[in-house]
Image 1 (cartoon, helix red, strand yellow):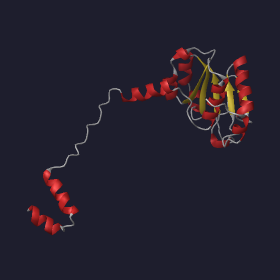
Image 2 (cartoon, rainbow, N blue to C red):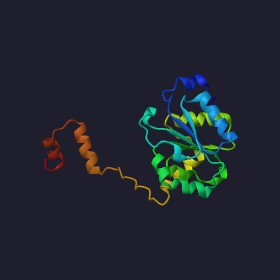
Image 3 (cartoon, rainbow, N blue to C red):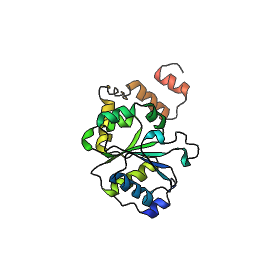
Length: 197
């Protein structure tokens, strides 16, 4: 991966989006905030929960907030419950990212259906963190190829493949095309092939 430099992010069209880091005060949250200060947005905020984040996007550049949710203290069941809460639904139009995620939680597919746009894992490198934040900040997804491949494969499981279209022409159709290719008029073709014009 290419390292994202502050100058690249300084020129980013999406610079200035309001970014919230949600979760308990901890070392990892501080690292994410340092990354934000150096690489993405001038407007970042800390929050202990989604409830304290304003639901309106009226004064937010680009009309969306980016919300980074620290998952290190949340169990898989707590995350699943969070996705079904009214406060999650109220914010799901924003750019939602889960960070400090455990690889073995296997929650990504459900999270994608709930509007999550990116996943940052506990064993990611700093470059992954900065690249992921910048990618989601610009409106793209930050998910592993493996998860993407599994989602695509599952979306086609059980669906019958379309029947191949039979494009072979009959002898009569081929003869008609040869007559058209020769420049014959409809009346001449009809006379030659003994069909009505």
